[in-house]
Length: 290
Ligand code: SF4
Image 1 (cartoon, rainbow, N blue to C red):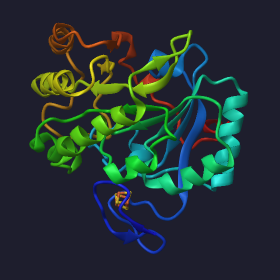
Image 2: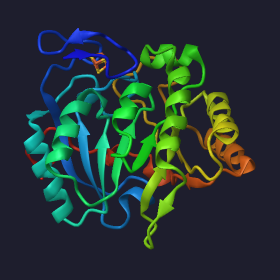
Image 3: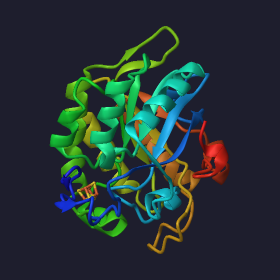
């Protein structure tokens, strides 16, 4: 398979060599388990059935999941194995299924879903760095998109992820996600059945970027598109970028939060109690797989 699944467009045959993400032909997964800490419309009270795929097409320098995003830890799965796991998650009473950082494995995931499609909202949890061609492969299959919106300037995209085109790409991808899902639809318990929920993680020293991104959401995305403003940043993965070696201060958080409120964007504000390494799940351990 010549891989052009993400905007890196490496064009390599992953059965014989690897591209930017370092992934070969096998689908690798680092965790399949209930997860309670996503936004309320995704996790609900019983949790989302979370499938954390190994590898990442963005590989942010500060990633809190470096063991899977940078070091590709995980187990090989076949489409049948993934389909069976999705069925088990559904049988456990999950309120949605979350496919997390799954872009390098889209063909295998589509094969798995052709074998078994859970009767639950299917959530595509993404860095936002997606090509339109790959998103179109997911059209009509994914119910809920949960994209990050990370960097506004080319400089920060390049510095943090080697992706100076991050915003150029994400600012085309996220409107396509909104187009596919339409306006948010919720069930009686507040679970999102369809829609796009945009996440933004505030980074220390970079509140100006956050405010530009929120203004872009307001000016560009359909009215009513919810935003999840996250303050959980912790310096992880031995990050060396100046300014990113500390948590977000209370004043920085309040500055961005107040901008979101002034824009009257609907969505979610994260509690300060969420700033803890305790919320980072265990990957690639026996207990990581149901
Ligand atoms: S998925 Fe991996 S190999 Fe394929 S284009 Fe993206 S980074 Fe390159």
